[in-house]
Image 1 (cartoon, rainbow, N blue to C red):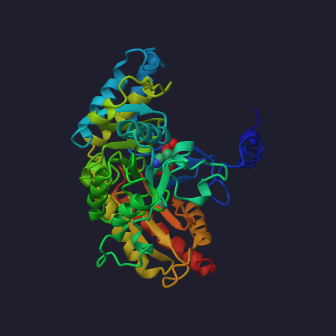
Image 2 (tube, helix red, strand yellow):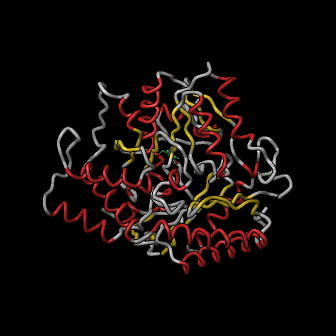
Image 3 (cartoon, rainbow, N blue to C red):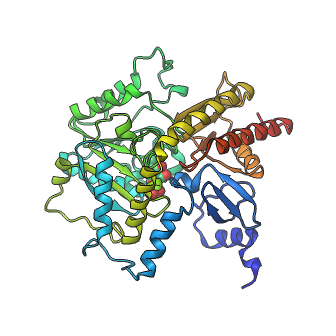
Length: 442
Ligand SMILES: Cc1ncc(COP(=O)(O)O)c(C=O)c1O
């Protein structure tokens, strides 16, 4: 087959022809990635990039970690069963469940595996509804929980929702978004109106009882919006008072990315009934999970839930070895330390570059909200895209998010070193200066 078949131009043309028009590509000149190792990826020309987004927040242990490779290669070489479902006994999903439950908050001692974060959340909704006999799930504006029908009904972004998407049994509370507080308050003097709004929402847009509330401890797609710590105690109290289950969506925040605990729910002491995860949980393998209390799990007794690939031997083996690496290499502690170093570096950049309006997040899940000017906070969406492109040309891959695409998202592998963090800050600094010189920084 001719090499031209794999050229960027050919791939773009064929994607246009064969993919749905919903498929998004990062970058003005899209990037073809062919190789990866540790914290780096390479394009088809052999150019190396420091990867600070990891697919999309999926690489926790590092690309192609030798132990993950070895585990999978050995399984295949031994001709271990490459696929079977949970209708048969295999050791891998059981070992993973045991390891995961040991890391989960106390009382969350039942687990199920899925192929994705969306499915993990669907399962969480179903379990909460079954356990309470109620249907309404509360979400937060600016939240994102997946691309399936039930999760899109809980989506707080117009861009991800479809005109024909039914939104039954879902209602939204106002966002705990300190930089753009919907109550016009300042974080140091507010009275947590955002948390109290959950109660108002239940009182005004439900019949007074709910099945669940779903919250990301740091809102990923929303642009790494990080609610104040006190928010969670008040909201869990309200959710439980109105009969609901608290679902903590850790698809982005989990796997040791945001605290010294494997799950941020545990790190922040959030009184959750169900925690969902995916992405970094399997270091990029197509696996999600829901862990829940026995009380919620028992409500499913007598019903069947089947997921053909959920619990697959290769996927669960990859997630288990990923968890072992995170534990043994103390990657969660590294995420806290490197996250602080990166946060400090970005804060310094904010003093020099007026385009940066806010720096926020937890651990190695950090966002920079770009604004055209700091007073009006006008969304600098084109500038965020330009900065991503400029950083790419300078050897650094970043992501973006936020309702208007103006938040730069940084989520490197948890194995990142101090030297790599400093390089990252230097490249962002240089790229912002270059945009300024070109008159493209607002
Ligand atoms: C917080 C959160 N929940 C759920 C999902 C859905 O996960 P998946 O794309 O694996 O279905 C995502 C995906 O970005 C997410 O960020």
